Length: 590
Image 1: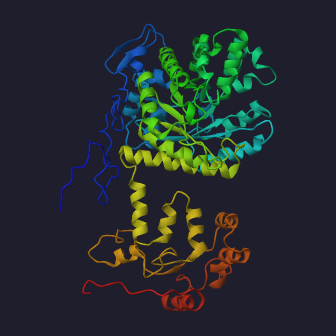
Image 2: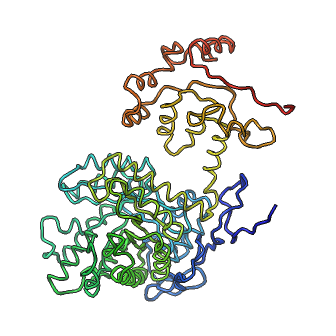
Image 3: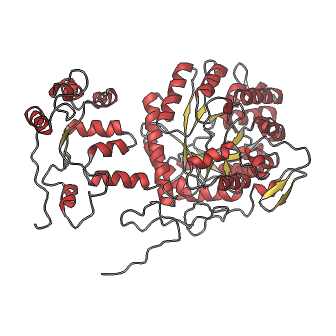
C-alpha cells in the first residue's frame, strides 16, 4: 500500500467528533485576529492581504492602546464599530457569539473593531424583532434574499409574505428593492415584520416622482435620513462610480447593469459633475452613524456578462470603494463591499482576494457570481456554482439569484429555490474552510442514511418535505432500501449488514423494523402535484393512506402499540399495510 502526503495546512477538522475517515479541511490554518481568519490557499499570483485594518483609520482625536482605543472626552459610542474599538462587548455581540459557537464574544468584538466583521443592526430595528447576526469571514457564510414590489408586479402584502418565506428557507438578510407601489409603506411593513437585517438601495426612493436629472444632495440626505429612521440596517450606496470610470464602459457588451450605477452615470453625464454620493460621502456617513446603519458599498460597474468581467471599469471602481471604506471607518461607520455579478470561474479567486487587499479585509458581499450566461431560467444554479467558489476564496455573504433572474420578478417558489441553492453554496464553503462544527450536520445525516433510517434522514434534511415526497413517490414504505437500487442491489444495506463495518450502526440512528411511512403532509402533497409524475388518484392515496389503512378515526390507529398488545398490532400491520421482502441480518458467525 502506498503512503500519500495530503495537503493539510493546519485547518480545523469541520467535524467536532472527527467522525468518519476524512482527514479534515485542506484550507489554511485559521488565524483569528489576523488578516486570514478562515481562508483558502492562494493560487500563485494572487494579491496579498492588506496590511491595514480599520484600526489604521481611527477618527481624529482617537488613539489606540493595545486592542482598545481611547476616544476624546465626552464621546458617546453609537455604532457597533465604535463600541468594539472602545472594548465594549455589546448585547448584539454576545448574541452573535451564541449564534456562531466557534467564536467567543471577545473574538466577535475584535473582528468588528478590525473592520473584518459587521453587525448590521439599526438602533430602530432593534426596537422590533431584529435578531442580531454578523457578516465576516471569521463567521459562517451568510446569504441574502432580494425582494420588492415592481411597477408591474407584486404588493406590500405579497412582499411581507415573501419575507417570511425567505426567513423560513434560511435567508440571513433581506434586501427590499421595491421600485413600484408605496415604497415607504412596503419598507415599513418589511422592517416591522423582519427578524433579519433589512437592506435597501435608497436611490430607488430618491427618484420616485422625479427624473434622475433633478436629483439633488438635499433629496439624497433627506431620503437617507427617512430610511434610517425607519430602521433599515444597511444601505447600498453607489458612491464608487466616478466620472473618470465611464469611458471604460463604452466598449462593454452590456454596459452598466446596476440600476444605481446606471442612474448615477446618467446624472454625471447630464450635469458634467462628479457623483454626488462620492462628493458628499462624509455627510452620508454622519446620517448613517446616527442610527448605526452599515454601508454596503455598491458595485455600480459590476459586469453583466462574462465578456465584461475583471475589466478596468469594475476594478477601478473597486479601488475607489477601498478609499471610501477608509473614510467610513474614520467616521465610525461599519462597512461591507458589494461584488460582481458575472465572472468566469477561473477569475473568481482573483476577484475575492483583490477586494481583500484593496478594501483592507472589509466583508465582501457578492451577487453569485454567475459562471456562464446561457442558462436563463436556471441562473440560481449557474450562480451558486460561482458563489461556492467565492465564499471559499473570501466572500462573507452571498446574494442569492433565483430562477427568475434576468427574466422577471421572483415569486414565492423562486425565493425558495434561490435560498436553497445559496444555502448549499454557503454550507459547502464553510465545510471546505474548516469552520469548526460545520460538518456535524452532514455527519448526522450520513449516519441516518447509513442506517437506512428514513425518518431521521428526512428530519435532518434541509427540506425534509421535498425529500420525503420524492421518496414516497416511488416507495411509500421505510425499509432497508430505496427505489433506486431495490433490495438486492442496495450497497448501503449490504454495508450495514457486514458486522466488521461501522456503517449503519451509530448510536441513536439505527431502527428496528420496516414501517409504513406517514401520510403526506399538505406541503408534500403540493410538491408531488407540481411534479406531475403521479396521478391525482395516486397522490390522494398517499395523502390519506396510513390513517385509513389502520382504522384511525380520531388520533392513533388500532395497530399502534399504545392501544394494542405488540402481537396484535403486528397482526394488523401484516393484514393491512404493504409488506416487503426482507432478508435477515447476517450474523457474526456467518
